[in-house]
Structures are given as structure tokens and as C-alpha cells.
Amino acid sequence: MPEPDEQQLWRGRSLFVRVLFSAAGVAQQVWIECRDGALLMDVGDGALRDLLAHKLDLEKVAGLVLTHGHFDHVGGLHSLLGFMRMIDRRKPLPLVAPSACVELLGIVENFGRCYPYTLPFEISVLGLDDSDSLDVGCFRVEARSVVHCGSMVGSRVMAPVPANGYRISYGGETVAITGDSGSEADLDGLVSGADLAIIEATYGAGDERSYEELHRVHLSESEARRLGALAKEYLLVHRIRKFR
Image (tube, rainbow, N blue to C red; front, side, top):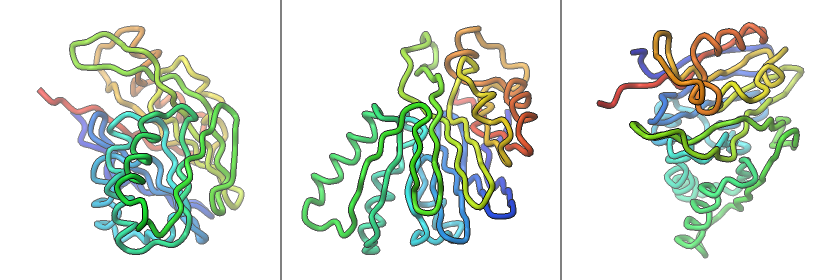
């Protein structure tokens, strides 16, 4: 099986991208930076460790952008917020996510209960639905709804969860990220023409999956590469690992 996608880099004219870590069912975090700030896309377990290990400047973080609420994409959020509190961050921190991302709302609410009087920065949760967009620092963030169902080893495909892909733009360049998605979503429109597409390829070559899994849970590597050809360049992330 492929190893987790670590330390994949891309540098454009205005944007710099580093995949800090990405392994399905473990964690994902992607750093997007420009000269005026940075975004952290997804905050899986170990996000704080990865940021510090790469000596990334947390003062540059304009906001966090979450594709959905599954544990491998939000599991490191409490630790990161705690560290920002400890270093006395003062700038507001927007958290962008699908509007109905209950996991994010729960984490933020609990964090606020833990530190009701000693939080030096404001946290705002900004929900985006399909085609909604907003500015986070110097970045333009546009959401595109995708189709992602929960799943468990040995269990059937579960109900879909609120999930977004995004197009992040700055300085005339665009990075598209699919997040977790089956092929049922309009992923062609999401990645087409992007300077860089970051595409999940959870199901590897030769990994037999049902029609429902491929259309409503995750992408195959072959479908991810087809999508990648619609962008100028692409990175494949979120490879699956065998746990037993």
C-alpha cells in the first residue's frame, strides 16, 4: 500500500502549497501560503505537531478551512486552538466549514466552555454552502458541495455528511481541493482550470470497491488522475492504509 502523503510541495507564482500529512482514516492537513498569509485546510490529528515540525509561522494563519467533520479532518482542532491560546494569539480566527458541520460546532462550543474568560482571540464559525464564497484574510474561498458518505470497516455505506470542496484564489492563481468525495459530485467543475488540484485518491489501483463506495464515499486513483488532467497540475492525497 502507498505510504501516507507527506511533504508534497507545489510552488506557483503567488501560492505555495505543502501537504503536511494525508492518510485516509488517520489525518489530513494541507498548508496554503502566500506572501500575505496562510490557510490551513483540514485539521486532523497531529496538525499542531506537523505545523511545528515544519517550522511554519502560526502568526500567518488567516483561518482554518474544513472540508467536513469526520475525525481524520477535525481531530487536531482542540489542540491547535489550545496552542494558539497559550501563545496569546490576538488576531480573530475564522473557521470555515460546511454549514451543518456539527462536529466543528461541538468542538468550538466545548473549547469555549473550557476557557470562557481566558481566550485572547475571537473564534468565528462561518458556514458555506454550494457556490458560497467569502474572503479569509487575503484569500478568496469558494465552496462547492461534494458527496461524501460515512463508512466503517465491515459495515455498509452510511448516510452522507455535509462536505465541501473548495477553490482557493489569490494573486491570479487558484488551488482546488476536493476534500473527501465520491464521483457523484460535480468534481469536474470544481477542479477544471485550477493551477493546482489536490485530489483524494483513497481507493488505489486494484482495490476493488462497490459502485456505491466509488460514487458516494471516496474516489479511485484512476478517477482522481482523470480529474487531475482537468487542472494545470495536481497532487493525489488521502491514500488508504491497512489497519488490520
